[in-house]
Image (cartoon, rainbow, N blue to C red; front, side, top):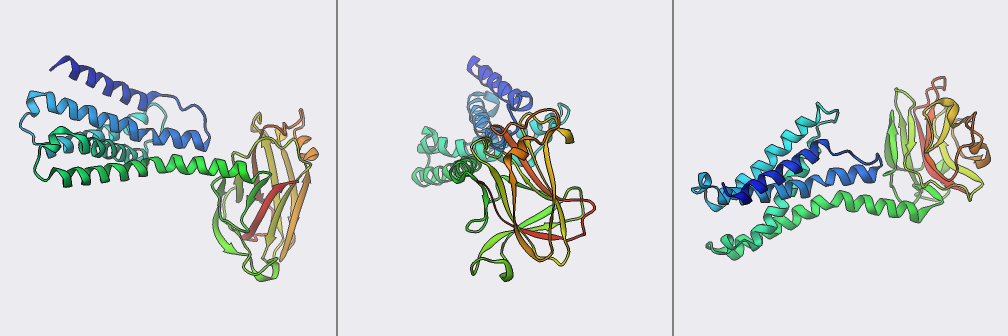
Length: 320
């Protein structure tokens, strides 16, 4: 085997080792999305390097053009599955989503390469074959880039709507709100509590489980220029809802004494705006001041001793 082929094998090995062992620099949705989406270009490169090796190795000399591309795609798939399995012993989770990204990336780069491949141009009906290959490659590339593009848009929208934390009255967007023993859905606010016809909100179905409610993650961190946090909630049930609103900053040590928590009651069949002075939020930890320039997360959940009201509506949350 030629030196160039050994180099290609070495590069493939380096890429696979990076997939298994490279540390993930952070735990934000952006970093996780970027990390997962990186599988596509990595395994696209693996597939192209495999194609290069297949074409230059005497053992594969009898394989036709279609077989070469199929073998390169299959290698990306098999190596992708292998790297997912190898991540289990090193403390990572095997992910079907990552394996799918691997195949999509391979299809993208192989398809685009085929559109310019001199061997493809030399075949019968090359124009149609190249057009189909380019189409497959571009579509796969768009699919591979979609999660990162969506994440970038969501972060830009988060910045643009601040000091509004969430607003479901006009658009349903829960990218930065996680379900916590709950199920979310877009809904019209029931007529007795709607301020206008057709007003929308996020319906929160509270389930039997730990801390049922809403988890607002990756908040825009600097709240220092504002005086109060406001949350517009509706309890449509005949039972009172006992809720806790919790806020912590980036330095939170995950202890109850190191965050702000306030219990409040949402009366039955009531829409109410809960307002909390940010000076109270800052004074929440018992041994220090919560850093309003680095707010990290806000959680609203039903208490264990609350009447079992099983739903609420969130209209808006904002700073003022």
